[in-house]
Length: 205
Ligand code: ADP
Ligand code: AMP
Image (cartoon, rainbow, N blue to C red):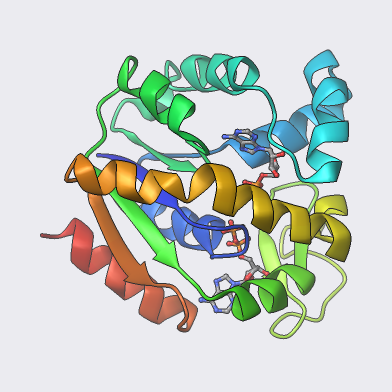
């Protein structure tokens, strides 16, 4: 199974992706997580991407496509994969078509007021990449033991720009995938289990 989770920042793509990837035994490929790992490790790619990410801008397509092409060759992708945060613009979607087919695109629809609340309370684990929300998890550490932190790009100024970038560059993918007959929209403005059930209902069709 090959899936794309589409949606604005804070829609819950990562939260839902972890569960679906586990059930279907497919690789969860978050280009954002991959870039954050590169930044943590201080690689050349990570250093080049940091300034763009901190400003809420997109990283160049050739960098992203290079990472994705490499990633989908890995052994854990043999049953398929779930892209979270990729593709982010039409040019990336067109390039993806030359390297892989896709079975479903799940568009997680969430109103902007909810996105802002979710992003401002998001805390991430630097070690395993898990995402929490301060309203439901007040501990300083992840269940894996590592400290939680607030992403630099989750601060207010950057969030505003990320939402603008989403509207301009990523939202057009909704029409793009409707035309391909691949798009399924689920209501993401509900509790985590309800959204999960809506996604599973689509995938079991
Ligand atoms: P994305 O990957 O789309 O940017 P995340 O999965 O990281 O979004 O979720 C953003 C924040 O919202 C996190 O703090 C997460 O714990 C929280 N969250 C995700 N889904 C829900 C939901 N259905 N209801 C409430 N909070 C949620
Ligand atoms: P995310 O974790 O998906 O919210 O991504 C965090 C940041 O990483 C984004 O704001 C972009 O700067 C960058 N990024 C992640 N995925 C992509 C992508 N597919 N194309 C371009 N930039 C990306």
